[in-house]
Length: 177
Length: 254
Image 1 (cartoon, rainbow over the protein chains, first blue to last red):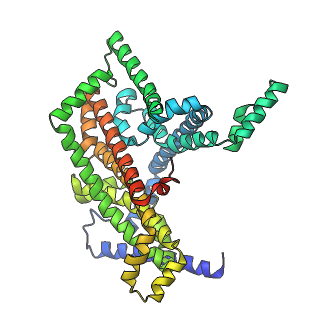
Image 2: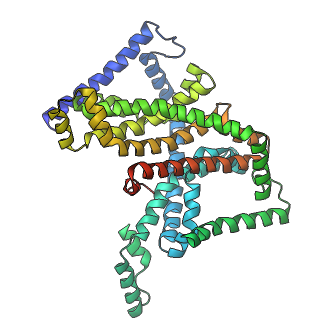
Image 3: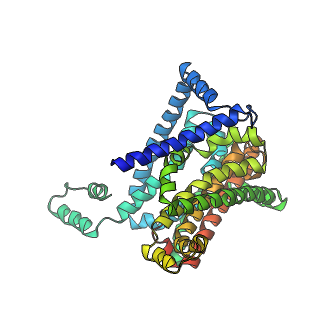
């Protein structure tokens, strides 16, 4: 970072601090009832207390765990399904329109259905998270597989003639994606 | 074109028929699943007695209210920050600290401050819609052809005239794209707010159907929410092509 950039960043942090100071003043002068707007100092104290007692840390860990496993499930399923759809024209004509219809569905609308299916369990949470985060992965994979240079595919076809066991189309497609 | 559309419908149609057959054959008794025929009947009944349409109006009113408030504010801030680089750099830390907050995490605060109802939901939706419009309009304004800005300087346009005659028209395609993305966000957030706490609209309807152990009605709501989401997405997509030409949607994330 250049000198000027450091200066700008410092000023920017100072502005953010000023906003917090205004918040503190608003709370100190009780412009808003403290029940709705506790001061930043009290909020900070309560944050420290939450982490101190381990309560907040456990919850934070739980959320991170949900996020990670949901994302993992979405990645695995998204890439697998995307590869299947992207590498075949037939799959694209038959399956892609259904995906286009499901995609705009607000994920949260699935929560009641997931609760009815799985109960209030971790599996329910993971299913909803995975469904919500699968789309970027799935669509990018479909697109990536569909956009593989046709010549590569022909190369595989030719290499198969000579040494049948060599070379999988997936390897080239994943490399290209 | 027509045959490809038929082929696209084929898979879901077969899946639904198979499910219907299986449900009839096994005399399905479930709290979570219902045969498609029962879902259609529940959907038609809910449309017939007006509850579904009432809930749709509630949800869309909150979603568009929030979109207008939050998107409008985001547009204003985005244009100002896009034109005034120093202001943008000074507010960077503040905005980047606020942006990653998930809108749904604001629910408890919105609930104590505003109680149940439209106001609370609109505020949460507005917070969610603020960001796409702010970020994209800022980028759009910043990447306007410098020649256009120079023209406005040569013509000695006032600040407001410059905004309305040069900046806004030049960045309109991106702003509309941001609006389309934000509309999708608005629908998702408003349904989520309703499912979580706010007792109104489609989200509350689907939650009530689940708790009343009416899987047919619950899935009917789900289908309907899907139709609303699809219609909103497609309608805005068509509008974008209509206003800005077929090229405007080519680079969309699909």
